[in-house]
Amino acid sequence: MENIIKIVHSTWAYLVVTILVLATFNAIAGLVSKREYQAKDFRISLFALIVTHLQLVIGLVLLFVSGKILWFTDIPVKDIMRNAEMRLYNVEHPTVMILAIAALTIGYSKHKKKLTSTPKFKFLAIFYSLALLLVLSRIPWNAWF
Image 1 (cartoon, rainbow, N blue to C red):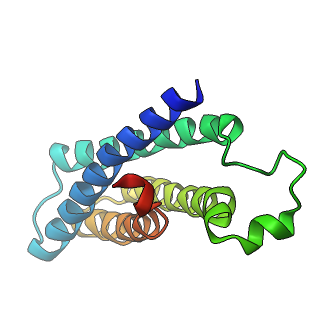
Image 2: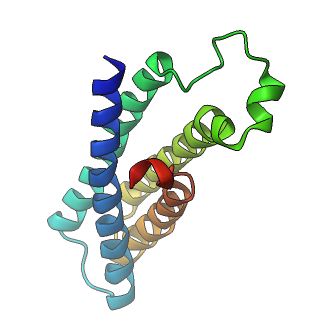
């Protein structure tokens, strides 16, 4: 079961990064070009929100079944924190990804409350860019390739 969830989590991550890059660049392009916010912009930002939240659910399941997660074992926390790989999987990756998804959710929620195009694109551009940077900073790249 753990292997299946790992494969789904890793494969879905490619979709998350792709859609997040698309949504971020769409928001930045809309802001810079000062174009009108349209239904396709809404769909792109919503789809990015949905795929990242699904990734969060898959990741939370993996958090409890993965052999790399050592919080629930007899290994002391100080040993986890001293080892870079264990720290990445046990602390940094989950924490930063949750912060990234929080940024996405805040940006999406705030953009819906704006009535004109420029503020909508501005909130999406800021918060989606922040989320993209956070996601890219804590992907375990050595496990990806």
